[in-house]
Amino acid sequence: MDIRHLKYLMEVVRCRSFTKAADTLHVTQPTISKMVKSIEEELGVELLDRSGKQVRPTDAGEAILRQAQLIVNAFDSLSSDLADVVQLKKGKIRIGLPPMAGARFFPKVIGEFRKRYPLIQLELIEDGAKKIEKSVEGGSLDIGVVVLPTDPELFDSYAFVRESLMLLVHPGHRLAGAGDVTLQELRDEPFILFRDDFALHDRIPEACIEAGFRPNVVFESSQWDFISEMVAAELGIAMLPESICRGLDARRIAAVPIRPPGIPWHLAMIWRKNGYMSYALKEWIRFAKERLAFHP
Image (cartoon, rainbow, N blue to C red; front, side, top):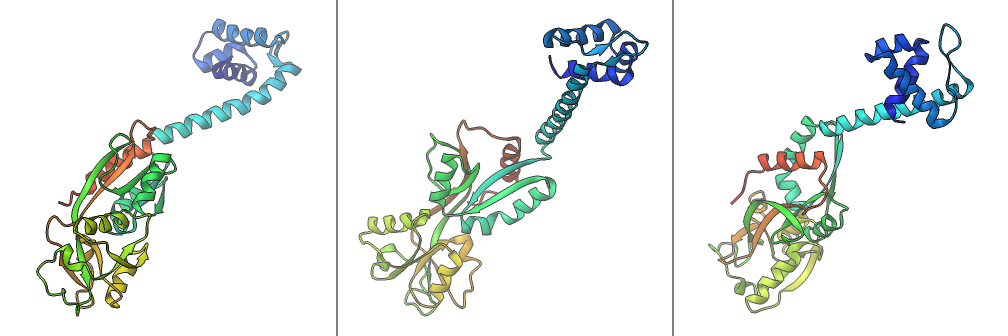
């Protein structure tokens, strides 16, 4: 028995006739009679009283019809929902965004996507890149933005930003007017870093150690704007990406290039390699790729 059998049975009862039901369903009368008979044989009960001029359901038929209506309604609803998913009318995408990447690159993309696909739900989770990468790997996020490099065995990716970090100091700092600085010149400075679930929490100290010293970390934060405010308050020095530095108030914070090789800040969207990808997620990736112009 399948959904078509139930629909044929329901139409026979509605029309009170095999012939009229066959006309409505655009099938032959023997076809519809055979299908109804197969249901009766499968269930071992007589569903229709065929003795009068009009076909009527038996007691068993009435019981079957009540359930059949529920089943057909559920099937039609399922078919409609599936069509909405395939046609990108419905869906949900869980996206992980680090604070700097989210604020700088994604508001416009998210706004345009919501406008085009208003019934696709975007769940935005703001966190550090290291935690986002683990969440994408574990499946609690569908896609996320991280600082490269990442594991190509685990993730597919799309890189869209290639920048370097700049040094942030107070305008009265001894290095504020320098054309550029080396990491070695920062040996005795108090550092303000991101907390440990952010990629830069590790990248900056690693670069300093390669330059011959371990940085003196005095504060940690999860918010880049709070870090820049601490620099403005002369509580230490910090490092932020070029695109973020361009938006800072030069009267309160000086941004100084770090001499090559510097510290790279390369961003990419990542998603699980060989993992299930919903229709909505595939469209988000395609949509975002078109709108995230590569920043060299």
